[in-house]
Length: 208
Image 1 (cartoon, rainbow, N blue to C red):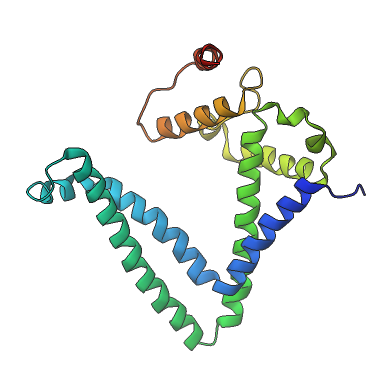
Image 2 (image 1 turned 45 degrees about the vertical axis):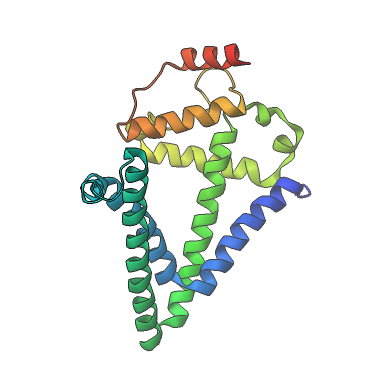
């Protein structure tokens, strides 16, 4: 087995920290935390027009009113969710399932850490860093890239069409990869139309 290099230790640290945090907090708190943050975003995005209307007589500037409406809904959902999460955690503790909760939390944290790393590697594969020595020598990167490719096969072509791919033409610069990933996420949400990859790459070259 080849010796571990710095990127391997970074990956191990990310996964390890995520696992330890979930071990301490337990599965209920960690799962609820994920649900609460996603729910807060969905609620704020769905109902902020109604909240803006309520704030019309208080906040005159439209941009400030938009931010205030979104923030009020988002933070309020987080507060209510935190109260519910604490109540559920106390219930789990009272029923004597703390050990099970922590074991499941450990599995959750491990999976979350791996997902974070795999997503990061998927973005990096669109940049020239894949030609660097550290990428080629890494023990863990190659294995996790296999996991990423397996995940793409599992998701299918319909979803992969909205995800950044290392096969999208030539290698992009890091900034271009980030812009393309953000654009595709916005397109998936119906916010903006997709721009041709060639046009995006050409505009990036012109800016440089």
